[in-house]
Image (cartoon, rainbow, N blue to C red; front, side, top):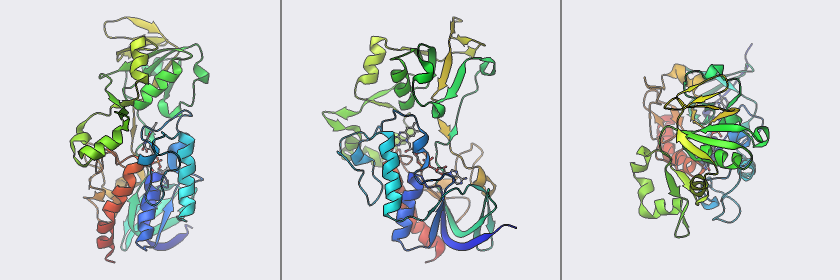
Length: 350
Ligand SMILES: Cc1cc2nc3c(=O)[nH]c(=O)nc-3n(C[C@H](O)[C@H](O)[C@H](O)COP(=O)(O)OP(=O)(O)OC[C@H]3O[C@@H](n4cnc5c(N)ncnc54)[C@H](O)[C@@H]3O)c2cc1C
């Protein structure tokens, strides 16, 4: 028989940066809550990203509410520093993260919601915050012949470091930060081609010595919706642009199809290659919540500024462009969590 926990005011599903930032705000408001996460430690998916990952935002723009990111404010933190920061954050604020709980189904009951976990425990709350991450379901586009390819084909989420690719011929697919970071480091030890559907748009990481994020703040651009409509630029201190210019790795339009041992480019030329790495993005993982009518026909989440527009009592943190372009980043989840607090209170009638 399933065991049922007591009914909380709020259950936050996901204990990554979004769930932790939200937990901080919920705790400030004195609500009764818990955070459920399928992993064995808080901090979300950062520990699964590739070894050399360096943030595109400096420490001063990578903080969650209540605790500045440690170190020099202008330094760009590495993956492991983020993992450590999030673990410390959770501990310092004594956020009630319950690890190793994977929620598989959520449904309504008369007092709110029931959340069923994989191990059979049922949780119950009046409201739920979905903070399950926008980068947990790797997306690989449909490409003719891909299933026939006998070389290595991986999504960037499975890429760790250059070791498996020493001396190989590799195509990296994608035009955003991860694709460029991976192509650049692989090109030191392998023959690399970057394949993109659109042109790569570079944006200087620092302008007149000042970080891009500070400019957005000073100019007021970050408060507009203009940025939401732009494709993601590659934030660059010159390293990637110079690497492309110098031919460290090649850059071509996206290939048209894949054979058992290579790719066929527009125009028909074929290259034999050993591997393809798809840095082609992610989709949010919302499966357990789908029965609650949260998605529209285009698979977009029916929400406005983090509040469900189809199902009262459901809130979101960490969706891409949920409120603005920073919504799915370290610095965005604090303000986005704060944004939902008034609606949450109103819903709970507290
Ligand atoms: C390669 C890469 C580079 C990035 N670089 C930056 C950067 O430089 N700066 C920046 O600010 N952001 C960056 N991001 C974006 C973002 O900050 C990270 O992806 C971050 O991990 C998102 O945090 P999150 O809490 O929203 O999601 P996650 O870190 O994915 O955490 C969600 C948590 O929910 C858990 N979960 C999911 N489903 C369930 C379920 N059903 N039941 C229980 N638990 C569940 C997951 O296991 C996970 O622990 C990057 C993302 C990627 C992929």
